[in-house]
Amino acid sequence: MPRHKKTESWTAPIHIEDPDTGQEATIGNTEQAKDVLDHSWPAYHGSQFERAEHACEEALNGHASPEEARRAFIAAAVEAHLHLHS
Image (tube, rainbow, N blue to C red):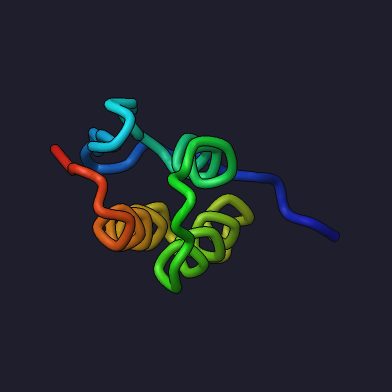
């Protein structure tokens, strides 16, 4: 039986900016991170992007902590050359 999706706020939100488009977002939980990965991510999808997708899914399904998803999202953002502010 599938577990219910969990959305807990992260210890600190992450502010990202795409230097190519100027698009900005503030990510405060795993659900928001997954939405950005799925719908607003730059064209470049490297290995950290794949790890972040997986970590977010695991956290939303209760199989990983929100902080694991946060760390994976940060690594993917760095890999994609997004500007980070926390």
